Image (cartoon, rainbow, N blue to C red):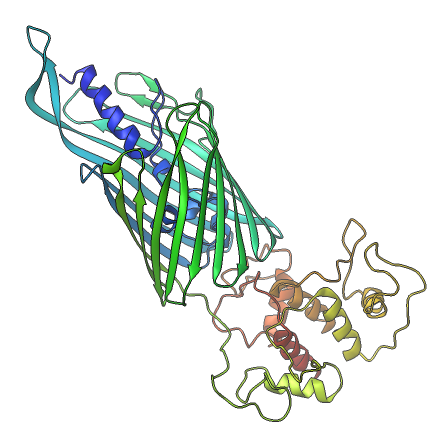
Length: 503
């Protein structure tokens, strides 16, 4: 027979291993330990790491930015090898959203059963048992409007002891998440974990006893001040626990190597917390990645350990880059021979439709704004413009340099404003927005049929116009079957499409 003392001792061990306390009639959620070496090295931050296959299992809304398909695994041992902890997962992007599936489990074996002798002394019985705790996660995430994604995770829990009647338990719960990306360099994520009430979702033992699953709110942000630097922060709030802070940084030394570090707070009791340290590196090449983390537990030194994650993500298809070290011919200094949009850029420049900068550059990869594209298209149509007599949008003064062109573009229904009465002339365009406007410019009739792009479902609000542009040959510069709808819309892309329309 397994004594209450043995179970109590095991609970203490596991609570320290998983990094939070055990309370009566409450069950461990294995997700609390973390689901990837990258996250653990960055202080266990994950709420807003969009597009990362592991982070979608913490905040399901992160799945919306996941491209193509991929698989991941993580392995570690805790308490100097006494507990093994394993993750296996995968994700797939379908036209109607992104799906994820993972198994996460901890196992400890050979735990000695204790009994009391006739003198009430605790002695080993000579027999042992195993204990396991796991969760299967089914994830769904989708962009519900521009820059806002939502997701949900169904979690199936299972745990138990070997060698005793009624010693297994199972249950379920659900996570809900949101991800907001107001700017391309900043994102904010919210994950409500184990949201269902105990009357609906709980873990039930074979004996009929029920355990609740602790509710937790996780709020996080990610900021990329420059291309090689990522700063993340998460806050965790749960009942009977202090507010916990997680912070991390990732410096991408090169395309191959990333270096990471972070601080992770864990609860000691209802009022106190301690701060642990995470360190790690990441190696990435052709979609394959290896992430390593060393997590330093200041509360339990035996729990300081190594984490290993192996993943594969279908590489993003990119526009072919110009060859390096090629001298640019006369014209724009940054549009070299062999550049994929060179003919389009120089032809439009000769016609006076598009221009460069005073330093002789064209800046082909620079993102277009709504004002710049409106101006470009009105010039291409050779429409005479005049300064508006009155302000047509709240944020567009009549003295604005682009006001005459924007008014002309609005008059012929190429562009429009927003419900709040603004035009947002400085707002940069993504690929879907830019192609949509150029499709209207070409007077292409929207086509409602199956989308040729795996990341643009036919139900997408702009799909009919994008499909029309594809069939008209305006998007031949995009390789493969991925549109990358949220990719920045560059000056080179606009020149290429406009040249295709006007030639």
